[in-house]
Image (cartoon, rainbow, N blue to C red; front, top):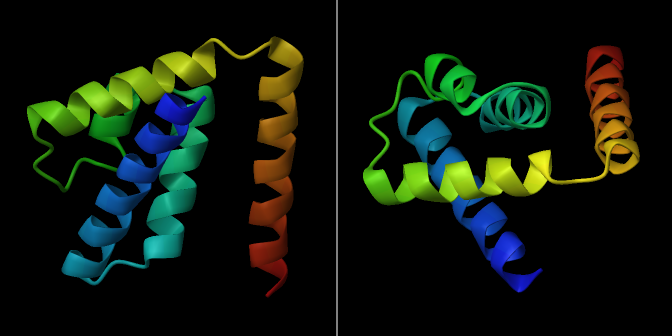
Length: 95
C-alpha cells in the first residue's frame, strides 16, 4: 500500500508541476488525468492529458505501475472511484 501511495504522490506532483509550468488549470489537468487513469489506457494518458509534456522513463514506469494498481482493483471498488469522479466533475459544473 505504501508503494502505491508513493506512486500516486509522485504522479500528482508531476501533474501539478506540469500544469503550473504551462499555465494550464492544474485542477482540470488532474481531473482529465484521473479520469483517463481510471477508465482509459496508458496510451490514452500519453495521447490525452499528458500529450503536451515530455515524460521521462522513470515517470512512465511510475504511471504504468499506478495504472496496473488501479486495474488490479476489484470491479466494485473501481466502479466506486468512477462514481466519485463523476460526482466531483458534476460539482465543478455547478460552480
